[in-house]
Length: 96
Image (cartoon, rainbow, N blue to C red; front, side, top):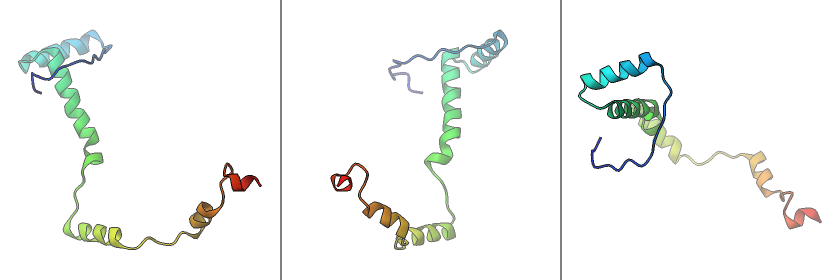
């Protein structure tokens, strides 16, 4: 994490004495402050948790199928078309 980044937000945690001691020991072993250690660890875990929502990989065959699906014309949805063509409850024409 860049040291020149301005930190303007604060996050408070409640934890047990044992958990705090473990974090202090791990931070010391990493030559980091507890704050730096916890922040770096939490951000790494956040990246792991969000990874499958940011990018995904496809094989060549899957990519070809994906492109074909994207290029295909939309299928007809008559009920949706009828719904969108009907006047809405709050439309002026609907109240007559």
